[in-house]
Length: 161
Image 1 (cartoon, rainbow, N blue to C red):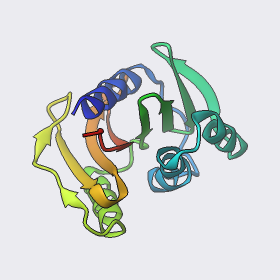
Image 2 (tube, rainbow, N blue to C red):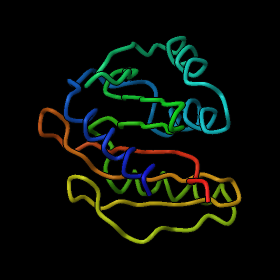
Image 3 (cartoon, rainbow, N blue to C red):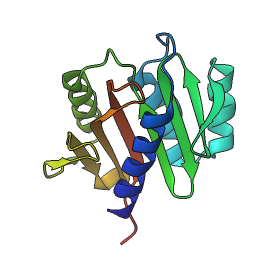
Image 4 (cartoon, rainbow, N blue to C red):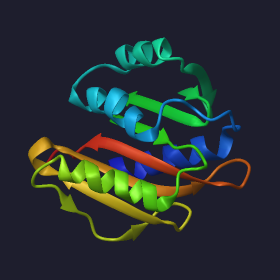
């Protein structure tokens, strides 16, 4: 639970402090598969950052946290705790975010849907855990620095027992 809360808190600080950029060619879905999944599987944030920069991401910082930006898409990687945050472009709807995490769950046999809860903004959170794969993915809606709603995805390993 602390990883989820920490990831949500990181997401709120990033969403609140990042200016808008042009529409990105990388989607939230492709960012999750290209950058987040390898991080959770054991690649380092340095390796993933190198790959993201090769794909056109630019480095920045928000609240002392390093982030990568391509258009409106924001990527934040952490080795400790191991967590990946993706902020989707403003044109991605909550229904699209739900569809993305639901499709992820289908690709992870045995995934279990979490209890409905609310995020930092009071927005709904859709959470799936994949115990067999030792990870979880959630989506929630947050408010960026311009007052616009954006989707935040957090992929992380399940907490140790």
